[in-house]
Image (cartoon, rainbow, N blue to C red; front, side):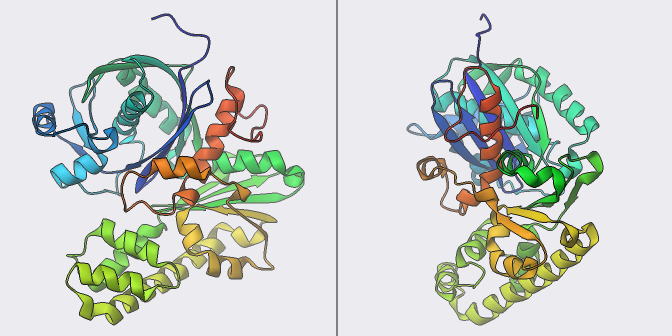
Length: 389
């Protein structure tokens, strides 16, 4: 297969703790968002194929997702791993460690979505936590991923993905930073923080005089999972973590009792409404105290400007807005809006909520890469800055 002048796809990936967010684009202007569950389990390929053979009909690729890597290891991913093999999200494992099977699997899903051949060309960009995005981390990811892309097994047979250049790897918040920098002239004269709070991590990028150095990338484990973990300890370990996270998120910061009551009725524990709400409130209070201590530790209060983004940031929008009032100039999600029609099609499971905020970073990153790639155009207005890649 001769190398084309432009890649078949430009793909940006945010390897989130609870969801892998993917933005894919074609040179003809098509866009596709994927919200893929993050569970991963290493399973013998013979068992994967046996389970697959029992499926009837034509399942969505998001729900029948497995890959076999060149070295012989095979993995079930996402909803398929959770429902068929009782897999759970393990946030103690670094995102780079599971990056290869996740990236291979999402490329197969995109191949199915766009009806591409078994071999296609791709420009790939990846967002990693600030603490997992050193030069050594990036080199390790490239060393593992590039050989694996040459040939890997999928539910529909062998696949090959050929890259246009090496993967572009930036710390989480990089997409938001590129967008904010493009629209804000005073960045070079002021200090700027890009603060993303997601399911697993809180990440901070600090920009001084227009640049972000290696030491200006800070990460912590203070994501939404801290709330879920503490709440689960208070209400009982038999509660499903995914369901608990979904209900707390849907109930919102104000803790809508109707939503919580419906959930408790579903699991036969309606009598526990008051102690359940109390457990959520206690968990939020403890988490908020930890978050404030971290803000002071990393110097967020000393910045001139702060951009907040992410699903957990949106959940805590009320107390965050109040806390930073009169401390810093605050911007939410860099005023980016991800197209609703694309978000609607991205939903693969009913538990996926708040996607309009969780896709912000990946969407900005995708638009930047498309702007830099010959033959591609951005979805809407120009977001990119020259010379950033």
